[in-house]
Length: 321
Ligand code: 13P
Ligand code: SF4
Image 1 (tube, helix red, strand yellow):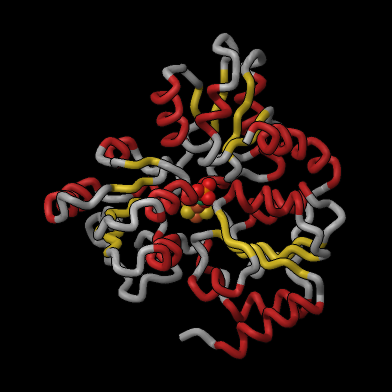
Image 2 (image 1 turned 180 degrees about the vertical axis):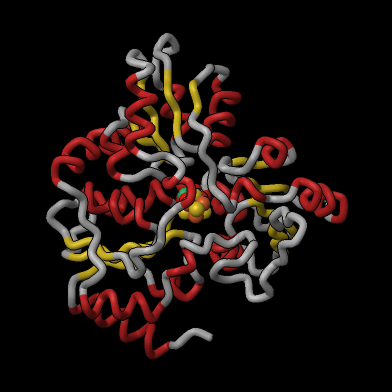
């Protein structure tokens, strides 16, 4: 249940401290509701780049707060839970990327925004799921590309652009896990429902999708189809909150994850569960957000020498978006 008093207290505290609260679409509904701004990872970066607030509270995962800090080195950037990481970002360590890059000296490095600041510092252009296609298309055909860390997104972009890229073998543990069998069963049961999938999903899921796009693109599709009564959704279920608000009468059918022998789905669908929620995103709660604003901690900082390099590929992305 949402604590209205706490929500109001957080809003007042944010106003008193000239703080802006930004939340990703995968956040808990009550956190999305208290935020000044909600968006996908591109929109959060764009918003951070132009805010005049003194404090940015990033309700999302660590790389999102780092990106905000890199773009706004003079502002205080807070995250309600420092442990909110990302399995995809963790799948590419800076030292490993450096070795890959050294082995391919003529290649341009394109990195998904779901990476650490150190990885961004080794990158030529950052992309998000909203702009990866457009940015790869803008690069001269003869320029070889190292793309990382999401294998599924890289493969999808490679297919769409018809260009070969060397692709890192990383994945998001939530998006790579949707069950193909369950999706086929959902399609059979609801043949009129379009399938909306995030490009971090594996190829077998994307092949069955009607619409492939970033969190924002999938939400935009729902908003522009108010007469559609059912949608099958293959992405993190946090976005269903905004989708349901946009189309209150529609039925949203989330694709469940594959469950291997011996595993059981947690009934409460929260921390540590085997479900289509990102437990890192769900680490942020209203209580932690309140404490974070009150104490102005935990703060996210990026070493100045890393930030000085990492800002360049992010700015290139923003200029091309
Ligand atoms: P978006 O770029 O769609 O916001 O996705 C970010 C993310 O973490 C997906 O899992
Ligand atoms: Fe990272 Fe996947 Fe969570 Fe997105 S959903 S933040 S890619 S672990």
